[in-house]
Length: 232
Image 1 (cartoon, rainbow, N blue to C red):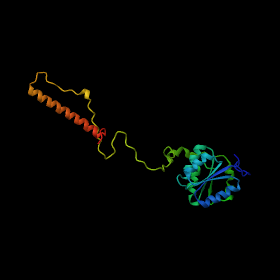
Image 2: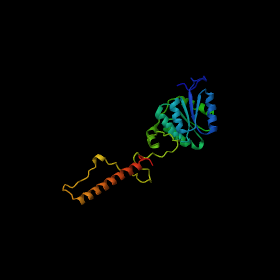
Image 3: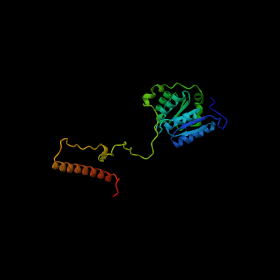
Image 4: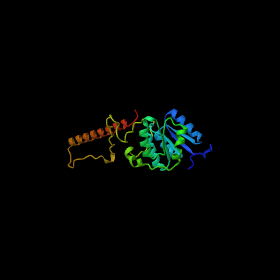
């Protein structure tokens, strides 16, 4: 893999610089510009993994203290995906001990102290171009970063209340009154005594029959009125 290129076009190697410190970013860009790298910048650990997969850079320069996902876990995620990509860790003096452990765990090719200089990079350049170490931390990645490690995009849309199920009342409202079915006139039956009634009983029977029919007709008319079937 030719990490050093004399060209300034798309055929030049790419370095992905992952750092959220503006001063450190400017210095690193200057150092790798001299080496004729195409430079890509990312300031978030989680996004850096996605960017790494997208552009497949020849070299990654990774800080440790990053938003969203620390540099150690981000580097392990990259190694899990690509396997043999070259990663350089950069860290301030106060974090060098932690950075050494992270570099060993992720199989980094080099570790540089911030602020990074061209001379410091040249001093480890043979190591950068050498064999890529194994990444023993991959065996513990699930313990370091539990879960399926699948990003869930934030939902920025409006919050909409779920619609009620069809046929059920809205919460807090009484149950709706269901209309009674209209009686079928063909199915109406009136029981008539089998014995021959007297004249007085005939009059009473006729009166009861008329009363029943009036009640039924009144109920039908009332139901039709409530359903809007009759004009007001």
